[in-house]
Image 1: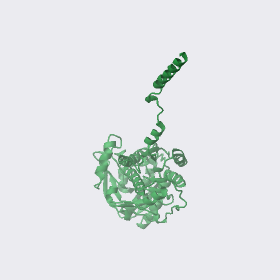
Image 2 (image 1 turned 135 degrees about the vertical axis):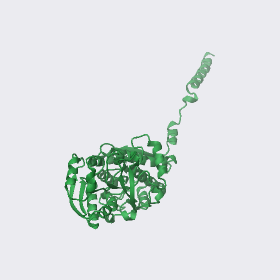
Image 3 (image 1 turned 90 degrees about the vertical axis):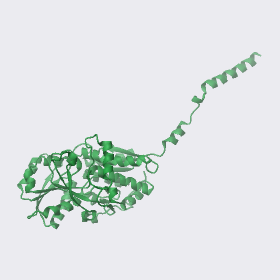
Length: 429
């Protein structure tokens, strides 16, 4: 009886312990399976690579904002191919070797699927060469060197800014038609942007009956802008074509006497909005641009309103051509992926090569299209000037005229050679 009683008591105690320690809260849960179910498909990673320090810092921020706006629109609609799109920002610096290293790390270690940005043409060339080796599509949103669409073009790279030759087509004939002697001096920044655009300008100058009487080449640091202005003033040129970028424009024109611009016709083939907006009291000669916030074009007012709702409290509280370029480049990439129904790079590249846009989509006066041979967008070019005495800096831009994409197209792009499909690795991030 004692043994039987002990056995019963043992069973009761075991049951009690089981009830205490194996309650529903402590029952082993299928957490790993639940986590896998709720995680969903992996996101599409896009790297934004622009020099975020130094003389292009404001450009980099403007470009990133445009790219982010395009991505936010897609994510608000549920993502792309059922996947969230995530933007990763990296500073490639202004060193081409470092930029190549950053691009390699983003591809091989971070696992990005696409790359956008650039600003600096030399950095764009370095990073896009790495992307081509891996089959990663590179969207150059805002580099304006002709070389990006010719000697440094790639099957995986697409360039969305107009280049110097496009702007020069709009400006050089206009300038030389108004000068009797047609004597031209070139001011060239010593890197790929300056040299490639100067080479293109020489051909256009000759075609318009002008003569290049000299060229001043300045380093990217441009340590003595006053000396450069003095050299230009001492020449007997009556047209001066300025090929400097970023903060160098601000430093240069801070040294210019307005009387000099009356004696010599100075042209800037392009001035970006950050360079104007951050130095509102500094004069500028005629220049080219691709977009300005107060254009009377479909979609512009709505786009500006969305931008100002998000960034209106910041230093760059109105969008300009750099924001527009970032937005259009990123939007084109996302649209191409959506239409392709896949992230396979060969399929997406074919979509990008055949893209065209209505004027309303581009917020410009003309439709635009991708040149499949050079992978460069052909778009409207505007002739502009800057009024440094405007009541508010955002009102300083004045548009004087425009030319169509067909008029701006440059013959150099007919010579562009892209890698074959066999030379372009297949990649589906």
